[in-house]
Length: 101
Image (cartoon, rainbow, N blue to C red):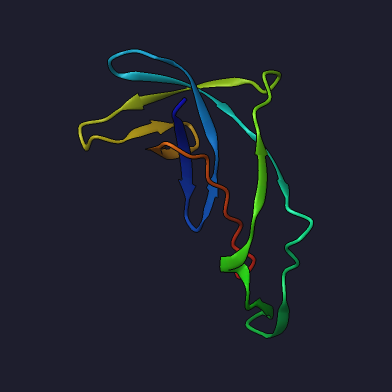
């Protein structure tokens, strides 16, 4: 199975590809739960605090057939875009939450 991870500014959200044509992907958002072994470490700084270990975050990512499907369309730049923005094709689902934004 392939994935189409959505890159929105600094956050990344995983979508699974559930259908494909020559220029269109049918995507479904995946469920994400922060791994209980990862605890954000925040120190005073920035607007209120800065997370110093955000690059170590881990997520439990699962498929959910009840999530709604969306369409992403291939553009001339070679990337797929949905109403949420740009999606990047990958062999693994990715989740990243920017605690410092």
